[in-house]
Length: 402
Image (tube, rainbow, N blue to C red):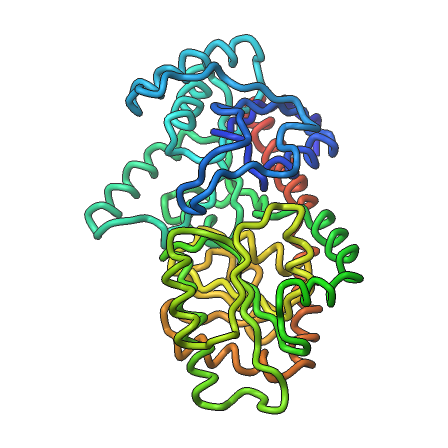
């Protein structure tokens, strides 16, 4: 990698997954400042159904600033103009050599995109969208492809978070030489350290949560909303229970549900009907609490009907456990290797989910081998690969500037 050029990085607001990555990049020598549209780290999440305040600092360890607060009554168009005015001033004063934008649909993101191009600053784009996430019928999808194929021609480099994200860029006409892998990763070191520290308290945590001694623990972690498709897991376990294919000499599995949302009452009723006594709902848990819960589980399941990537899968793999995901979870081509560290099933096919759950719930050796494979895979999908990919993109952008 040549001389590290100066970057202005645009994000709509601080994100619990992005901040550790930014700190890692800055510590690795990236000359970068972040500009946020909104800086507050406490907000009401309507899908979780509660106020969220992350218990780890999101703006420490790297240079950042927040744009002035816009009036709440502004339309999306006026909000974009508001942000554009302030961003043009910022680009003029900072004079970055490259701009890096995460996302492209929020009014702030659209304004950042326009400001970079107006100021003649090479723009790098990173997002997690894939073709499966483009909504609507064929006419709308064609319009989306035409519009973004045109917009993407003016982008200097694309930072792909995974295989499906790269496939979208390629489908929209972006040449391969402009795409650089910057994996959608979590702070592996943080999770693995915290999981090791929590192992001594594993059994006492099981007791506090009311989990049956000796029962394999399946973990679901996410918002309790329809897209996460938790009913499929409950129904698949009900099917396994009724057919009697689980080990009758061992306690039945426990499903640990971490998260909250509007669907919780209905899910609790479904669990009581399908698999009474098998499911524990523990509500929303903050970042520092999650590693112990990942370390407690024997198997992780994410059955979503829509999921751009699925960073909870990364987190679970840091605990060295098998992972089972639907084919609508965007990380599966990169992180879930069927027959090695888990399984992939067709979303909403309860029978297929039951079939892939069965061997992992009855074979402890299979869980152990697959869990070790998960840890090996995730150790190669880390912030270090992000630093490498960003460096390659900056070299490419630097040559273009020259």
